[in-house]
Length: 152
Image (tube, rainbow, N blue to C red; front, side, top):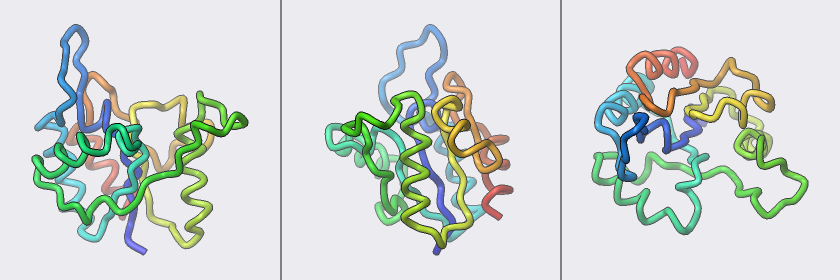
């Protein structure tokens, strides 16, 4: 299996500087940082863990994805949607969805989480394989270097 990036979009590919209204478009600096991961780990694939994977957002995601030069084949799968399951805590939903995907793919050993929601993920998955971004900055070159180290 290829190495996997569990990708959130808001706060990772889209930076939200404080006090600035930002349209839901990928931030070019964050896109460049993400592309450096793709270059540093050539066979990597993306599993979308963002709410952008949900039906009401897919068209917008697809448009931004292609506009920024990402091949459709890069986005391999998406994590399961557990919003309708009452036993799943909304505070840890993202981490539980990633955990469920990993449990369904037991041969997966090379993966990293790119997300800005530490509290939704760290209690479930720990932090060793996670790069937590600052949503005001989004993905930085330093974050990308850390992701490459984890995936290698």
